[in-house]
Length: 487
Image 1 (cartoon, rainbow, N blue to C red):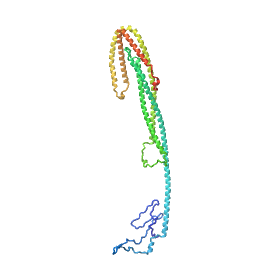
Image 2: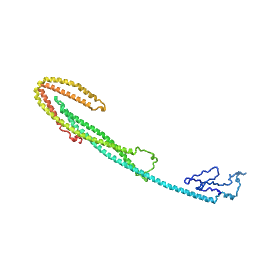
Image 3: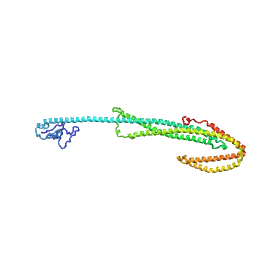
Image 4: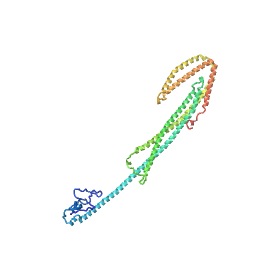
């Protein structure tokens, strides 16, 4: 076949390797304007288009004698073929025309085939991606729903624990108020006991003795102060525990508040749909990781808060039981000591009255004791002088131990022993001094006789008056409900 050439307006002529992505074949610039084309289903065809056997040169111009521009005849090579024959060289043959149409039809069919496949694949791809997107969205929604369930569980646990803690804290505050009321109520009988001691200091002579009444009064004062100190220390421990409870309460409330905020946010996110108005693009948010915990540490945080609160409640319960036992024990001890002191007062009054009666009987026997009384006075003075050095040693030791720093200032066994030693030596000195004064008084009685007896009788009357006055003061004692802090 003699391929005569193609027209410039052929739309199907172009190099194509794929109907989806056409890529034109580069044309060599060293040849004439002939191109080679790839048609689907055909091999390469080196088509050529015969050019005219001449080129129209640039039209020459020249000037005439008058200076006007004239066009000269164009330079063209002589025509080899006749003019009609040369015109036929610029046309295709009918066979080429039919083949070109066939190629065009096949190319169109191939293009439509590839386009159909592309459309079908695109539809399947869109369906798959829509299904994948819906699945991931459903999975995210289910995970948000599960997260909401987890938050609801911990919220209920935190709420229950917070209510229990608040109830326990209120009960502990009530126990603290009872302790404070009981400590204040113990101040009244303490003042009465101190007043009795001050009144008994007005006793005169030999009646200024460290008797059972005074011992019981001192024990009563020490007991009341000890009970007050125990209750105050227990109240301080309760106050510290209340601080721990408030700390646990703050942790629970803060955790519960965070859970409520997280629940509100997650619930809002859970209720978002593709048709919601509040959705928007936040580009790059998926690459931002601002989390500070994982599900394990998140659950452990709330579990630790609940365990801390439970421990605080357990300690609070123990303190409340201890406070209840302390109040009951303190009430029993104070009542027992009060009764023992009153019994000692009764016995002392009876003893004083009996001694007063017997003094008059023994006046006649005092004269023969003058010599023995003088010797006794001398021995008592030596014994008192011999007790001063041990007393100085014990008091110096106690004074030195008062400078121990901080918690080392402990009421240990040596402290009790030293205090007991001082009290013992002081008691000994008091007894010896009392005995000395008694001997001196006895000597004076022996000298003055009737005057001393009258004076001694007046001392006994004064002691009886003081003790009876103290008994009148001790008729009132706080009731048990007041001692345990209910009123």
